[in-house]
Image (cartoon, rainbow, N blue to C red):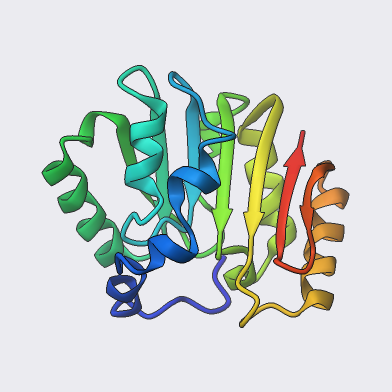
Length: 184
């Protein structure tokens, strides 16, 4: 599934506390996530967004964190244990051609694909898998880094998502900042 995989060591840079000033997980995800929800986070890396998501879903919720790199997931597991959030986080290793979420069929309330779609060799397969996992009315937040993804490429990503059956939430569409909320 991955066309380019973020190097393992970059995962530590992504955990920098300084990043919270640029992308505050609570501010970014808080409007979409409620206690008790099931949230899917493909491309979770070492869990910069995973741990805040686990706090947002509360004890009755669940976060399914998926990444292709076992090393990233090992660091996430250690961080979740230290934060006392292991009961809320299910960690899964993705395969080269699949997220490995086929068993989730229509059980996920919300998915957050942050800085990950551009790494997929088959974004159409990615969107199809995520759509299958989402409940009717479920939403997918897509955010891509401006430094890696041009406006033209992001528009292509939006087109692929729509061809996969998603529709745009026009209240949360910011092509300049490469942010998009999709609905099933």
